[in-house]
Length: 379
Image 1 (tube, rainbow, N blue to C red):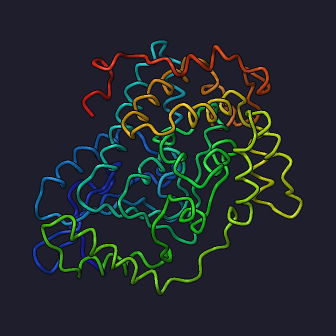
Image 2 (cartoon, rainbow, N blue to C red; image 1 turned 45 degrees about the vertical axis):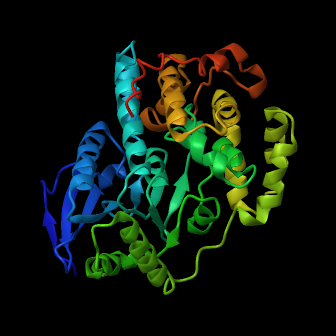
Image 3 (tube, rainbow, N blue to C red; image 1 turned 135 degrees about the vertical axis):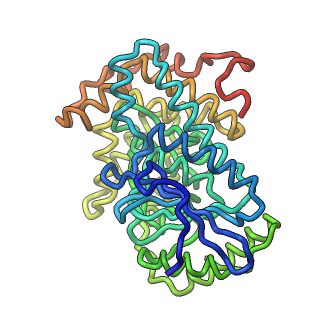
């Protein structure tokens, strides 16, 4: 068992610790610490993580960072949308939404561009905002308990936190399929679609941390990246078998999505796929049927309009879209039905994709700020 040096209070929203290595180098550990809320990412967490990552980046004695969640159930089950719901109900100007999403996207971007290795321990549930943290880590580890999804269609939102960027990098048709259905993927499929790099058994974290403390880390980031990769590959060799893939057997059928000219035909294609003996596909189809039609259109449009854009451009566009979601009303209604009243019966403004007003959709892609005054301009 590796002895960790606690840097802040053990009941803080994010707990920071250091593991001392053999040659005076250190491995830094950040733990999202809200296990009862499945480590949902809130503003306090963001405001602790961002400056601490900056501090560790500038500290030559820190070789790498481990980012994980408290408890066994989840790394991070998404953003704290309940606080966003309360803000939407109380704040006509959406100031809180702008603040939350701005700081969240800055943190995500910071992780994407971090010079030192970041090992993200992707155990358990990883959704929405949790995937935003995971997507940018240099070494993303999943386990047999990993369940990863962007289920924003169920709450009238859309796949943000860089989804416009990483969903477009998946095998053809898969990013659109996952965005439209909100389907969760396991460790096998996470590696297949490019959301994970390594598979290690869930009960091997302590062994992993011990091995990390034994590495002869240096002060050269590139070499430390290589050392971490080799260590993870060596541990991965002894892992149990990956869970069966849900996506690979359907890959050819999912790829056919891009052959259809419009979203309505793509939706029909998904719903017509044979799910009689496939619980995963059946659940994915149910997610599409139950989700917000406006969100479905937004998923389609963001992937088309932002394809090929830089990561920073994607975050900048998504910030406008996310704040606008607080103005249109579907987001608030979706959270109400799922998490506030929990009646599971959202009263969507548009009842079908055909009814979605194109002018409303276009409004999501109108920049709210010019380049100079954009909240993410200095990112």
